[in-house]
Length: 281
Image (cartoon, rainbow, N blue to C red; front, side, top):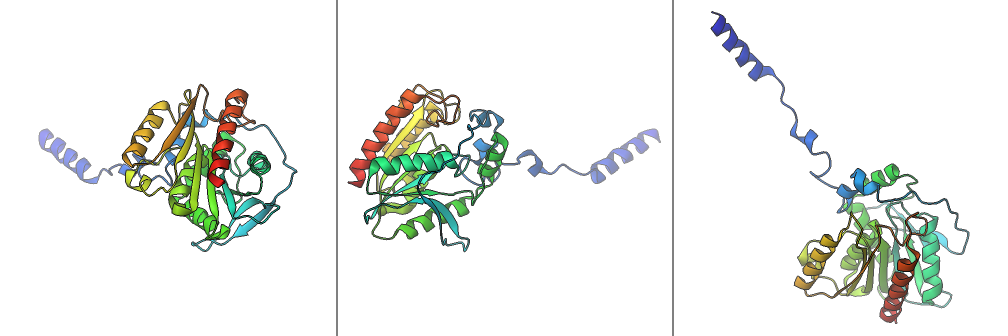
């Protein structure tokens, strides 16, 4: 009788004990919002970003808005060329958002390029992260669909006759490349600083521009192995990629980063500026 009672009890437990839901073990990697969302969720990746030094930009430029295909207007920081020009540089923010540091960098590029319209896009729709945790959540929640809608909206805003170059850092480095893919024959140059590369070779084949990739050998997020694979993928796609690798950490070109590398930043900026001037003509 005792044996029978034991077997009945085991059977009841197997039938009525609730099973754990499988989705609880894969909170993010099951369906990441964008190609860098998984990195943004990683505490180790978050620690690669030093909290920006407080800064207020008070120079020229204005915030503008433009329509997008998903019906929600997007915005950006515009520095309009003094002379009428169809040359445009689309600037893509770091993972912090469109903060005053990005506005300052946009103004510097505007001044040094000359006769080029510069538009720094707000990819978080008005939100800015001031801590690692905030920035991580913002980057995790930025959907591919919304990001693409903003990129396409910006390209439509500048017009069909526009000659467009793109540049971005970290999250913006990835977006700079994605924007170049989306813009196709309107894109004449693409600069990406330590952003996640596109891994789909078929998508890379649609690029109508070469790419300048700037990375850090000490970067533990977008590491040298990732860059090496990117080089192989671009070669397989039949596209030209120029890689400049500095002995520096992730985010080395951000002046607000306590681990900022002024020498590497100056050299990378000189290289980027020369490339952009040549491509924009």
